[in-house]
Amino acid sequence: MILKDRSAGGRKPILRSGPVVCCVQDAYQILVPVNVPVLMSVIVGDTEYVNHVGGVRVSDAPVQRFTVPQAALDAAGAYTLVYTALFTRGAYSCRKGRTARKTYSFSPVPKDGEVRAYVVADSHGRSREAVAAASFFGEGLDLLILNGDIAPQSETADEALMIFDVAYAVTGGRVPCILTRGNHELRGAWAAPFSEMLPNADGRLYYTVRLGPLRFVVLDCGEDKPDDNREYSGTAAFHAFRLEETAFLERFARQEAAAFADGARHRLVLSHIPFTRRDHGEFDIEDALYTRWAELLNEAYAPQLYIAGHLHRTALYDDGTENERGLRCPLLIAGRLLGPKETGTGEHEYIGAALTFRDGGVHIAFTDKNRQIVSERDVSYN
Ligand SMILES: [Fe+2]
Image (tube, rainbow, N blue to C red):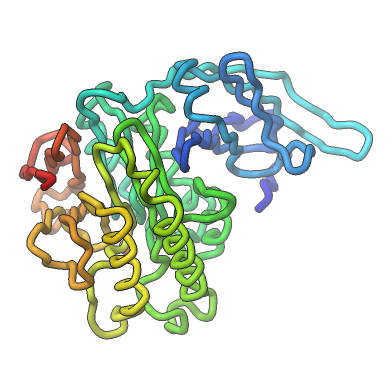
């Protein structure tokens, strides 16, 4: 994954949009998409974080990554990007531009009181509508969840970076985000670079997240058909990936789940494809494996809400519907893109989910691009 456009160093803006603060385990990963090769660091409090591989600073990545302890950024309430375009990187000298600095304020998820989160999935390239819907809480937003298929596929760099564009347009780098992969984003020449650029735990795209009173187990199903499906033309290895993920869940259930859930007021599961749903035909895959995932989560973690997408609907299922594999909590599916024919207005519409986490449950408002509430539901934890 290499940024090739060195010649543009003096003309294109260095930052593609702005930073996105993602959450993985107990840390933030500050991800910064750039247009040109750059030397970049992030200053939080008195500490400078440098993106390097074994001491060698990374200059050619399309997304610069900085891992910062949550406690450090929460306490500082701001972070500063320091960056210098690198026109040439030679063995004995480099040609560089001027160094710039940009400071962003940051607000952590509140430890007490309500937490306001917005969930977007399946906007499939209609970023303007998705950003408009996700602006429902305005400055009151505490957490943004982009749960897959934000882009229509990953054939170009612009498509692979779309998720970061949407995340920055909504948050301005001011509040944390959780980003997951949708199955359509796993297709095309940029699918592998996209998978490397996303937040991850030492390369793993499945991990836990601890944010104030919220806990997430973030999972990734990959594609929705068998690896040998003709559409993938031999580019898919998701069965092996899911086996690794099963081993992670078994380790989590055995060693970590009890301590992880301790002190949590909301135990959540997040993935793009709802693995609890037994599908049909060529989509009927991994029954034993996905059933095992539900068993492990039930036994060790007792989740209270499962947030998924992929079905292009906005719905809350608390009666076992779409949950044939028996995860013992309600399933929230969000969101839904409507085409001009469906709206009848000649325009696209997007509906996502505005979640307000309160003691004992969560209020769900499905909202449109005009920030209007389309319907509402409540989840009460038993
Ligand atoms: Fe999907």
